[in-house]
Image (tube, rainbow, N blue to C red; front, side, top):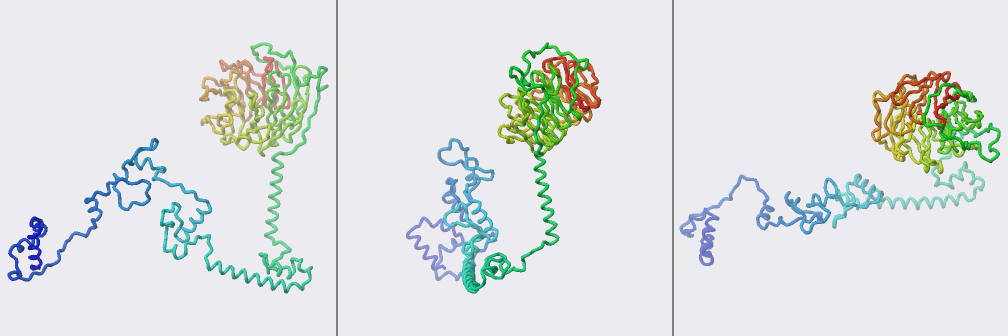
Length: 600
């Protein structure tokens, strides 16, 4: 060691004398002996390896960082692999170069298209995805959709080499060979069989019960299963067959019930369908005009129309003129009566097999709708009595309405027993919309706000307001104190709705944006609990009118909300009442006694 040391010292003295202090600093233990050491004077020294209690740390990356600061260079956001751990500042540093005009700064914002980072789109067919998904779950490897260069698979690469990269849908090589051998074997067998069968009678070959037929048709899944030909069913199979047949019959009868077929008939009872000038019997009289603008409460009975054998469920005056009145009976018939002249029944329409629930005229009165408990809705020609079209969903329609707009007279709305409001286009016969939000059978449909919206009431004790054509409720009115409202009528000024509440009162709602209850106006005194008695207004809007469960017709003053008059109209329930559109002191009522009465 001393010889080496002296050699090193001499060498350094000649070449680099200025590095001596650095060496002395680096190895302080050698300074004592370096000056006067010589091979003769120095004793033999043994150098022991130095020991450190500190754990060994790989500081290569740290040394690199300190040495050349190579990690300060910017990250390329498009690269897939980073060979070192970048710092937080580097990852979140803004992207170098000109900024994208619409992207935010930094990798995190600009390159992000998902809350967890950047997601690449991969166009993969469903079959390919399923194949790789199932392969990964079975073998532990799958094809990499991003296919980074040099490594097209992810997962267990050892298993990949072992299986030679097959997927679950690939047949292994040994399996393919086995199948080929089996196929050849089968082909040779069939050839031999064909040669043996050649001598057998042709009749036996065509008989599926014979052995020859089975041998010939060996590829059949039932080959060799001659004993399996069954002639009788087991008890269990018989039971199943009976149940299945019964179910099918029920389905057929259900479809028949959906549009329960009844032959449509109509009988004209008048003298002649056209007068001497060729005018139709439904044409309004030319001189029919409003007598005055002021409505008066009727006092006496003027006329009684009797013809229905059961109760009358609804009445409707002919639109604008009121020279005819249409009535829906529980005897399955719809009748139209003359109001001005003879006062007789003009025509009877028979097209329902059960009671008629609701009727509605189109704007000009030439056609009308009927809804019956036989689950049918029919659109009639008023003059000829012919059914133009029929509609059914297999549920009972409780209310039918046409859109009041002149250009939408082909749009039919029906409130059904299955909680839906169904919209038909009568020109095509197709259902164009379903409003399905109510929790009970729908009772009324009332158009408001220039026919842009409509209000519906239901057995679920709520009111819902809809935008026409959009099946989303825009206003939902339901309070704990509310009762079901089976009849709603619009005030002539279109600002208010009167709703017959089953707690024996008539409530008034605004038709403005908020559809608020008017707490100042409340009409009470009548008994309607349990009956869908119609509520109505006088044409000038000064009076509110309603039938009740005791056969009376009630009149209230709109301003004061006081009872103006009651008339005893019917035996039993007075279910419907209509104010004449022109003769403004006349009112028609109908009841479950089968009568329609006209009051003045």
